[in-house]
Amino acid sequence: MRDPYEVLGVARNASAKDIKSAYRKLAKKYHPDQNPDDPKAKDRFASVNQAYEIVGDEKTRAAFDRGEIDAEGKQRFQGFESAGGDPFAGFRRRQGGPGGAHFEFRSGGPAGGQGGDPFGGGAGDIFSQIFGDAFSQQHAGAGTRRQAAPGGSDVNVTLDITVEDMASAPKVTAQLPGGRRIAVKLPAYVEDGQTIRLKGQGEASPLGGQPGDALVRIRLRRHSYYRVEGRDLHVDLPVPLKEGVIGAKVAVDTPTGRIALNVPAWSSSDKVLRVKGRGLPLKDGGHGDLYAHVRLMLPEQGDAELEALLRAKA
Image 1 (cartoon, rainbow, N blue to C red):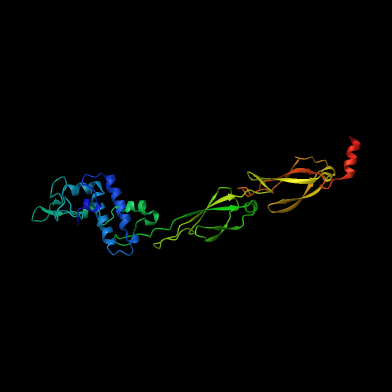
Image 2: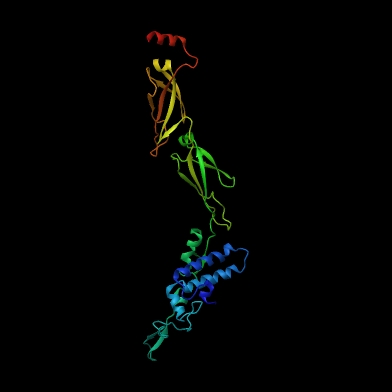
């Protein structure tokens, strides 16, 4: 086994931060899933892990620097463990039998008793930082570890919707980067600027892992008819002069259909008529309101009788 400092490409007096940085770089570079066509990548990857297990841990690094363990983490004196400089600390004196005192050997695993686990708490913890949660280490059987392939990337897309979409929460279509189109079911309550996460609709993993997610940001289109204020809607309601004077029922469009609105007699311009529950959905399941602003309209072709009447009253 090569010197672990040489494997990681760092000096013997390198800081723990520099060692960790070198390991992260090499582990990502030589990971077998990143190099499926390179048969030597697996061996390089194993060497990098072994080196980091030695010098990436403060205690095992100190033991290696003192010459107590070799580059594989094995004790240099087979059958002995050094403790406090005593090469016989691995033996325990025990009384027994007619032969008097005898000694019994107690041994830990390689590299300070890690039980033979090549990732014993050092490299394993760092994998999720390098490759993300998809590379979290999992025990599989007797001390072996299994790694999931890295997942695909998330994609971000902006989806323009109308006031009518926001009111009725239908299925709408979003186009992802690359031209792929997907159906998006809007939630009952949706806001301008809200982001909807669609699991598994992002980029595919090149290494067979889970696909990423699609992050769909909702953007409300400007409407030619409705003005949105919170969860309420405001509309201008053109009313002929005659109907504004004597009163009438006038058709009004709402996001969920047309209704007949009663305009009282002598309704002047800027009179506001409130229609409850015809606005946008609320979080509690209710709806905002719709406000119709009366706009009195004179006859487009004129009205001789009306003009004569007004002149007589002048």
